[in-house]
Length: 114
Length: 114
Image (cartoon, rainbow over all chains, first blue to last red):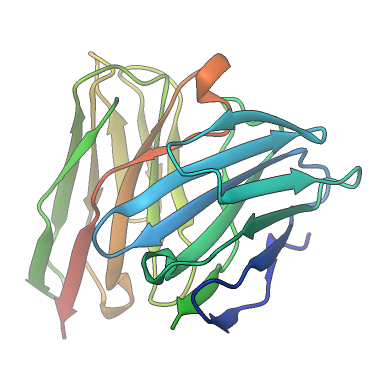
């Protein structure tokens, strides 16, 4: 069974640009969550999608957005990039996004904003 | 909001020693999860706990879900060099504003000297 696949693995962008990251969940998993990991703030929840609907959102500005497709694949977008957006972006999939299932993480996308 | 306090922040041990780390929360969780993260990779699920008081083992790892649902600990017995990494606790709750959301501790950096 293939794991969670995130692309690309590494990305370098310039301030002011926008970026789109992709996440393919484990087959059969319908919930995809996104996290930002930085040395200072640790792992912070961005948002969660289930059946193409955003069900939950963390405390991030509107520059961070996402979507989910009918095959459960998800993308997140960051517009008007800032230096502070440099981070490891992780997605996690689970069967339902409920509390009684484990969440499987991808290897992440390392975004560097210069 | 909910916060998890994980301790210790770092540990330096000799190969063969036992390790113990724990997480406490100001509020309850329905699920506690323990993850290990290697450099440049996403967190990998080690143990999932779904019931207060539950004690679960996975090889040399043992974790417990506290009776109050506000804490959890992870023990590693007879450590080996490949145990090196960052260990995270995470809590999850049911439905509503908790969908797909894990709240993470700050992590415990484990170094094992051969």
